[in-house]
Length: 74
Image (cartoon, rainbow, N blue to C red):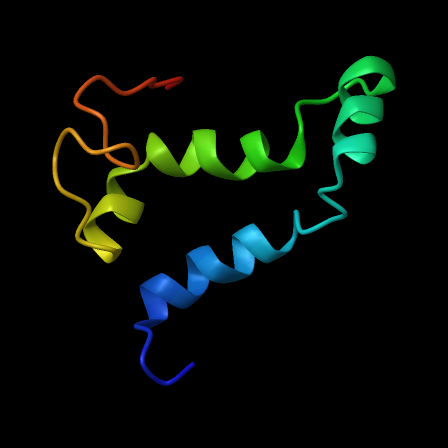
C-alpha cells in the first residue's frame, strides 16, 4: 500500500466498501430484486464523474474513468 498516495488510498477505501460476491447469479438477483444500483455501478459511476479521482490516478481526459462530459449534481 506504500506505493499509493493518500488520495489514491481514499478512493481504494471507498471502493472496498462495495466489495461483494460478483457471481452471475448474485448480480442477476440484485438486478431483479434489489432496490439499489449494483455495487459495481455504485463505485464506478461516481468515480468516473470525479475530477479528484481522475487527478489522483492521472486518468487521461476522455478515458473511461475520466469522460469529457461528466454528470454534476451540485
